[in-house]
Image (cartoon, rainbow, N blue to C red; front, side, top):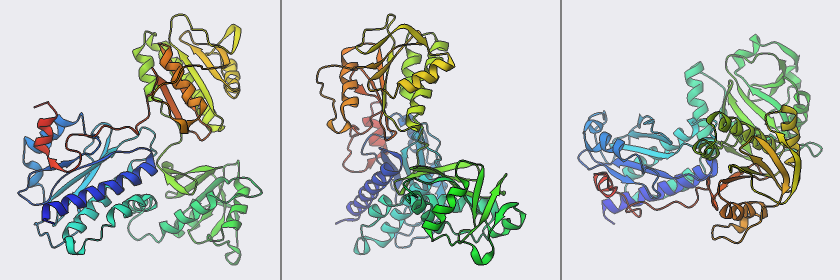
Amino acid sequence: MDECTFIHRCIVETIDGLQEGLTHFSGPSRTAVIYSIKPDDSIQIYDPQGLLTGHEPKFKELYIDTDEWRKKTAISYDKKKFSNLIPEKNLGLAGLISYGGRSSSAVYQMWFTEHHPDMCSIGPTERWLEQAAWRLSHDIANEEDLYTGISGSFLKEYATHAVRDYLVDEMNVLIGWDTQLRIYPVLEAVLKISRTPEEGAWPKGKLIFVEKRSLPKMEFIAKFSKAEQPKLDNIKHIRKLLQSVENSDRRLVSDEKTIIGIIKGDNPDFSITADFKGRHGFLKLNDNAVCSFSDGSFKSTTRKAKLVQVEEALLESNMDPEAASTLFKIVTSIVHGAAKQRHGCSIVIDLNKKPIFISGHSLEYPLDLENYEYLELIKSLSKVDGALHLGADLKLHGFACLLAGHYISGEDRARGARYNSALRFTAEHDNIIVIVVSSDDSVSIMMDGVALNTRSQWKSSFFCNAPVPLEKWWTASGLS
């Protein structure tokens, strides 16, 4: 295989693994790369699912109209030598996370993925993209004879490493390079504790990890003697101890090797917190969420649905903007309440001037959604089988409503009756939005027979089967 074919193979296999890994971490995620291997090569693009569509003018400005991107490199090209990667930071494009670098074996790379609206932090994802650039540089330097093809598989399983790399980078900035706190044992313990029930109950409470030099400054309400400090790898013991801080502002304290004691009040200047909330939890650096965890793995999600499509539909409707904003806040409150209590529900938002008839429990006097007591009742009614019927008049017109309809082509048998009934119903009624909350916290938004927030059906982009020159991609976009 010639050199060009080999590089294309490296690109394709790397991006496939990157996409699969990020999809597990953040939900359906597209990936793309813009790169140039040799100093005089044209800039290339590989965007197999159209992630970069809509950003053509910016890329023309950055890479076609000027050669400034070439002149910034401070590493001499040598394809047989892989030196340290010089980072290229996030380009800051709307809806995208980007990160790349320059090396002796690849003069320029910029990797891209989607910036999901419900991410705790983009830091781990940036480290993931940086690792993709590092792996590609390494593979190209090794050339075909030494190419193992493992980069894609490595990136597919990179979630814990991405979280660790981000924490280490931030820790070095905050407290310096001489820290003795090891991150991998912390992450391993957090995941093991998260999937260890005690008397049938999942863990709740906070466990913080601090540097040993912080311990003398901390005020413990209970401190274990050194001989009795439980080791962090004794997971069952730690799980039992976690009950002592459950549903309180107390926290267990660890130095990454043992449990030191229990504190109450402020954390030290630097800490990593595992906030266990039952079947899921959050990992925080100081007070900032880094990621969540559930089912034995780390995820980027805040676990709070970002109802962007609902907000856009309400603002584009004929509703008064202030009323639309109020209705959106009410709907968000109901959705988050259902997700938090882990019960499924359906919500019909009826934007018609006169609400349509839906079979179910109708009310003699519709309930005012802006009344707090009524809203709390409505949240409880969402547990009853069937859908809530909310009107543009900010009233609840019915509950336990049955959403009937005829078969449509967009149904997904894997999603169950609630999901498919909502699709059918919106296909047959105008000015209707239906939100479906599943018991596993996933949220789907339907309108006109389409799930608005389903991103699994992506359209392939121009020449998606192989990298192409960026200028050719720009010309094919029709904007030239």
